[in-house]
Length: 308
Image 1 (cartoon, rainbow, N blue to C red):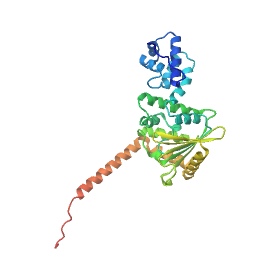
Image 2 (image 1 turned 90 degrees about the vertical axis):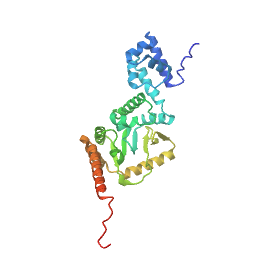
Image 3 (image 1 turned 120 degrees about the vertical axis):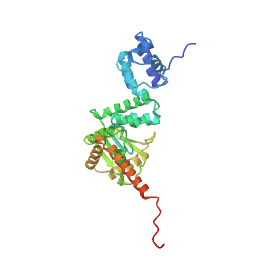
Image 4 (image 1 turned 135 degrees about the horizontal axis):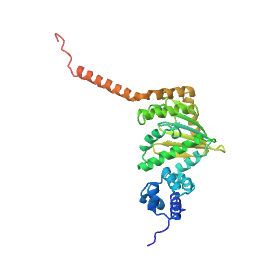
């Protein structure tokens, strides 16, 4: 029984697969021939051509495009294939973010993706519930780093970031990872508007969540609120206005730019040469010492006083 041809209009992954198969057959190669040229198994090529299995990584796509001399066709399709694995609202947000002229972010738990180092991004992404395999992890890392490239382009958006103080103190990865990441943030203070929301600011409307507000070229705004592995996109003006007011409150409660840069620099210095590990060891030793003192001095009945 003949296999039903893949419908290229059914999904972006199917369109990618149809083009991949067409390019391969045009060169007279088998799936095994192509697989050998890009260092994957023939089964992986078959998966891509059938739009089954894991999505292709950006690195594999570039290798396939080069091997098949596709002139960038597969590379151009890849972002659309990748975004297809996200919910509709997430894809919509990613598309809008790619066109925004102003990005305002409040990060409550981790450094914003646009400012993450690769090592830090790897640590953050690998614990996400939606990362189901090492291949998906690599896809997410490549995509995140690719989005950062826009900040270096001539039409780069203005970036304003508010970091909860918890972002500076939460140890993600080792001391080396944290030191590199905070140094990256310190340098970003000279390129973007970066402020720190101190613990002393107290309660605020975005406790436990993060917020991004995008301003589009036509002046319209959208907002995106995010929690653990879930988010919500707001496009209704009344909803966006509430988010903008919450962001303005966070900004008013944050440290000034110069003081924020100094706090980030001090935090980075604290992770230099294993600083946090030494502090953790010192605290552990102090706790053990106190425990020994309590064991030596505790458990004894008070001495009976003479004449009692």
